[in-house]
Image (cartoon, rainbow, N blue to C red; front, side, top):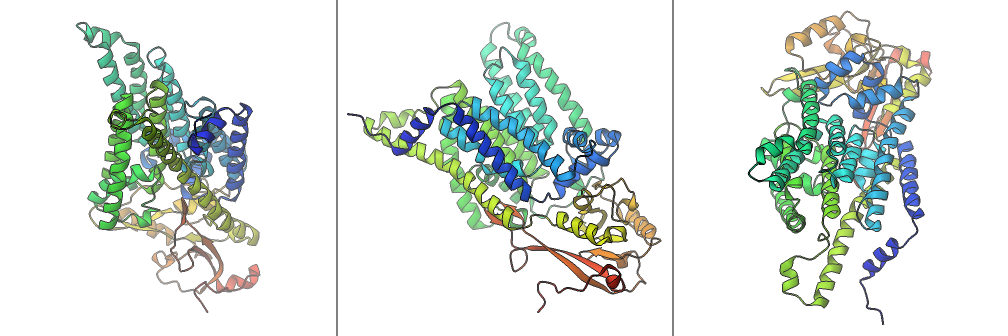
Amino acid sequence: MKKNKPSLKRIIDRVEKMPKWIDWVIFALYIIGVIIITSFHEPWFDEAEAWVIGRDAPLKDILFLIPHYEGHPPLWYLYLGAIARTGIPYELGMKAGTILINAVAVLILIKKAPFYRLIRYLIPFNYFFFYHYGVMSRCYSFMFLGFVLMALFFKERREKPIRVILSMCLVCLSSAYGLLFCFGITLAWIIDIIKENYSKGFIKGILKNKQILAMMILLAVAIVIVILIYPYPDTYAHIKKSLLPFSQRLYYSFIILPIDALFFSAVHTDATLFINAGMIAITLIVYMLTAVFVGFICKKTKKTWYLILPYLMFSLFAGMKYITTHHEGIMTFLYLFWIWICVDESDKVYELPEFVIKHTKEKERKQINGIAIVLAVICLLVPAYWSIGASYYEIKYTYEASREMAKFLKETGLDQRNIIMNWESVKNKDGEKIELINNQLAPAANAYFDHNIFYTYNYGEPKKTYADWRMLDQEQIDEIIKVYGTYEKPDVLINYAPYQMFFPDYVADYVLVKTIREGQIYKDFCLELDDDGMRNRRIYLREDLLDEYGLTRIKDYYED
């Protein structure tokens, strides 16, 4: 008579016995799902900015100027630029390029990861792999691929270190955060080398160790990247004053982000990133429980430093310098890498802790093991549920207004008129208000055109369609205002563009002709800013031009 197994364990066993072609079915479901949801997704500013940089910026600037202001190495811009300069349409080219990178990573994961097949089949549908860095086109797709390749090759790092190092170079080239992760992982790797080679001839042996020699390649690449991305004194992110106190940023990056990257959802968007006592209590409890579980794995696999060191490097930098909620998923990449190498190099991962074995009977141990499996699968199902929620909102709402705005401007011919878009006003670290006239959301719209359609953006330079992220001083701002004051008067306003700053004596009536609703999606949440849960993008036209373009004034959503 067969012994009864936990029902979930039976499912895992059955999935293990499925034919190999099921791997391709799961892969196809991932690709089809991403393509479908991607077709509904309207790219937002960060996605568009990278595309127009790759398409329109001079190669010299992409390599040696723009990275200082963007904070990212040039790889993503070069990749998108290679696609864009073939003439392929914006959304098709960018989305296809992103799906290609993610498809390679997911296929390797499904075919090669050392997990139960059920786990391998669930991971690709994790919110961060499926939606946040799958549907959205960001440089972090290269980081995802790099981490998967690192994990795949890591078991043979002693014999074939170059493959691991090249994978780490890809992670570093994807983002500045990749440098921090790889720095921590390299330190952990060096600790292992020291432990394995400690002897009387230790120093001489270390200098000849091919793993250490291979690391010199990574060091050289890292140095070049740091030189390329090191912020200039007038870089926006370097000067802008954070809305969140330093202590709260640290708490978020060290405590909240690591659990939100797994299965928790304490913070939904940057607008909700304000930490109170209740949030601290809940997140601390969840963090400590998670740390206990992770600690058991660390003790069994001896891979503690491969998680702790990169986590500390990333969290410290994020808390001190710059972090937003859309960076949470890169911590998920680290978790994937870490658990992969733990399972790949140790057969004790699935064993219960020694003290549990010592103080329980066999029947109780089976029950505990079943509970552990259930909890592990739940941790995989929660992010999959987020993917479903995000996909639902993506289909239902407009994520970003620029696609519809560009279509409206083209169809009406208003793209040929003088257009001004609103811009950001921020405070620098001294508390001084700065008007970032050249840092508008214009790139999100410009991506749909082959030139800059905003005549007071980047001095109206046709090919400078992207933001340069320079924080200007008041003297420079005054000079811009003076120059723009010599231009023709505006015909079209996007949102509440304060054109009076350029034309103080100019009086004209602008009427609302188009309203586009937006919803900012994160996990299973849609950010509420207006009373109906949506944001608005408004287009105003000078009243005397209404008849010429066959348009009429419309009511705003809050008007009777």
